Image (cartoon, rainbow, N blue to C red; front, side, top):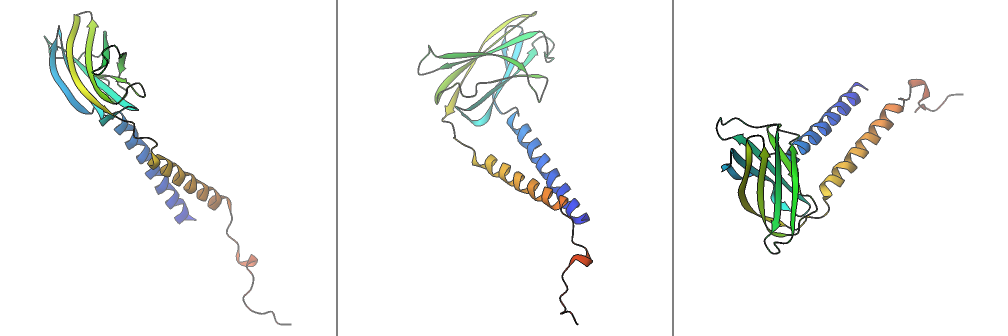
Length: 188
């Protein structure tokens, strides 16, 4: 029973580590697009992830720095990110970035399931007490969605099997010596 408990703890720990790594990977900084680009009283840096960007998953992360002091600005500004289609400039999406869940020094926005495959122009605009910063743009290429991720289905199925096995193994009792059938023929 001690071996079973050890195996279950190791499997549970491995599952937790896998989920934490997947979560951190999903909200990493990503590919640098611009670094310390002047925009009014600010220096703006931007990253995109994942690489490659896809229709169903496009994240833009922005860092805002005070140009005079070179200190990061983490509150008191509004960061707007606009994506404009290169093929149809009338098609544009604007989102206000929120503080990033992984790194509080950055602002993050997601354009999941909003974009079509093709080239897009990203425009950054920051407004706050120091003033307005705009004019930082860069192109990105968005690829088609990759469809259903069978890896996560496999991991989920494996987790269900392991948890089911653990539940059955922990609820059942080992048969005692008295309950085993005897291998010897009985003598009368």
